[in-house]
Length: 222
Image (tube, rainbow, N blue to C red; front, side, top):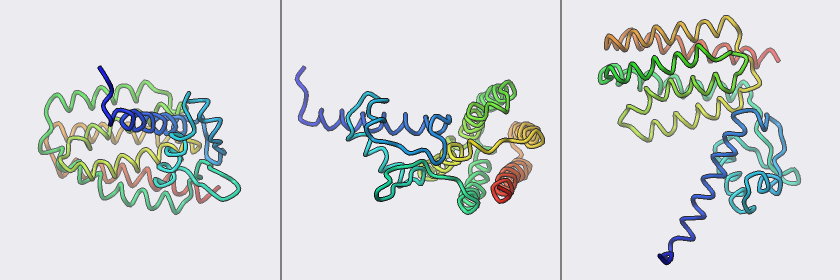
């Protein structure tokens, strides 16, 4: 079948999204730590593509705050700072309760089972493997967030969570905070199982505030 006139454009769009996703994943798993210089030619070779989708991916990630582009220096992976942490967690403190409140009203047994399965993966993942651990944590919260009807809010939340996971990768999770995360997840699951919106909101507020406070203090102490 002959290609339609729009086929080349569709192929370019797919290629752009693929490079964007792979670069985001490489940053999020630590292949490119904060401060790493990103050379267009090297990235094109890594992803088996031309430089055009690489430049587009860098432009998009710059707009999202994950990449910094400076004259005569090119692109580098952004460095997380205390101000950025505060801004991200202010957004999360607004959106996480918003999602949880709705989820508590509409969640099913299948939803709870999905949360429990993801929680089991979290508990099996060593906290020292932070990329894997925070990846499972993101998926745990995504089960709740994606249930909400407000897709724009979900998109904002997901972007901020991915940004946080990627840039905070070098910051270790303490043993005490690790225990808190798992315990607070269990509290949240039990509240949601009972469709107890009030208890679920209390659990998620403690959870998000605790994460923000610990990360903020660690950054300030560096």
